[in-house]
Image (tube, rainbow over all chains, first blue to last red):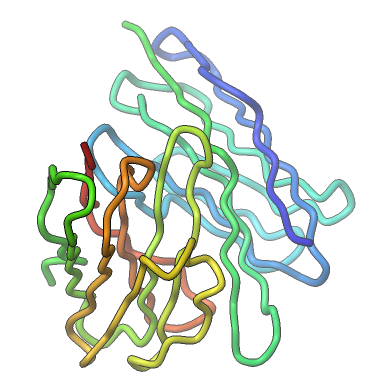
Length: 115
Length: 113
């Protein structure tokens, strides 16, 4: 089946530190990959996406590259801010037949950035 | 556009009562999804609709749960009777097409006591 594995949190960083949140996936076909962010008390928001191998998604200083050879989509940011504190979800979407698309989420990684 | 709108934001109900959660997707989005989020199980897809038609309801936990989409601008998720283990945050999301990302609502925090 399809699955997403994220590094377990929580992750605590100082402001301006480098961030990496690891994400690997298992899929039976060629998925699209996503990172979503959830701020406290809010719904999930799409942060970035990549639809094919070697694509790089980027937004708000965050980046992730679709690596087919390692089945990974690690999230990175060069200098985090306190406002980046949130829960980050890696997800894949794949066609599962009969007109059905399945979006599968990882468990989420909580990031706390301290001043 | 106001985004995906869910109501109520918070719901506290007694075990055995009927609960109805509501969702208004973004206008023009053909796909609507209902998710449940708990600490133990993370995000679970309950059901999704395409053009108001339920496509995949395999995530609906049991017969106590039902979802409808009578038109393109409104969907409900109903739990009858509710149980304490149904306590969770329920999210609605919509998408322009199957290959696009999803836009989530702010969620309904349900507490069943």
